[in-house]
Length: 113
Image (cartoon, rainbow, N blue to C red; front, top):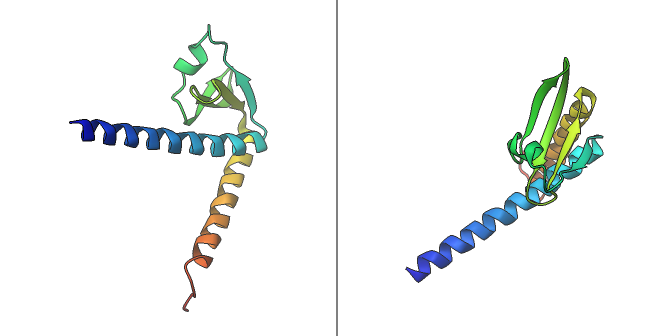
């Protein structure tokens, strides 16, 4: 029983660590794309409760599309952007994935045609 509890704690900690690293990576790209970071007042959790955590979602407000990313754990903040910022974010994500693909191909030894 103790081993199972320890294993569960290690797994939970690992998952939280990975989620935190992925969130920081996403938040770095959102900032580079021009999204604005807004800290959430601890007394007002409505912005965090209304948005799924660690997911970039779109909403229409007053006829304008807004993109929102909530991080309730690391920074207790939301990132806000519009269509322009979202397009730049997608471009940065694509650029980063392409760079990672090149690294993956080059890091596995000699390549054969």
